[in-house]
Image 1 (tube, rainbow, N blue to C red):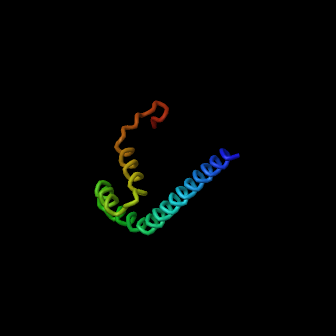
Image 2 (cartoon, rainbow, N blue to C red):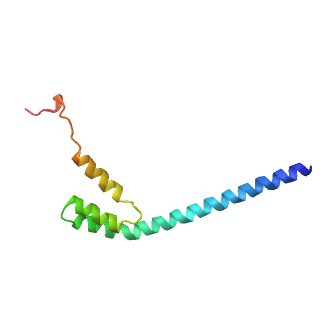
Image 3 (cartoon, rainbow, N blue to C red):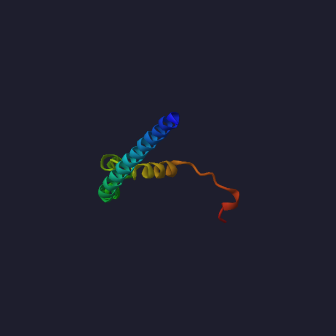
Length: 93
């Protein structure tokens, strides 16, 4: 009986610690989401007002602190520079 009390207390302690950790995680993620929403429109506006794509990405680096939009812009830039092979069945005649 005494060993089950120790195990029960140990499991309860682990569950409490995991619960607290998950609540902290949720609060931090909610804070990040609020910041991203506040900064998002300004970051996107600065991106589209830049004269070139490279300058737009540079503006996103400054304005997008949460790194929500920057990976999308960088991926689009890399995709635009990738060479797409011409498929024989795509040739226009």
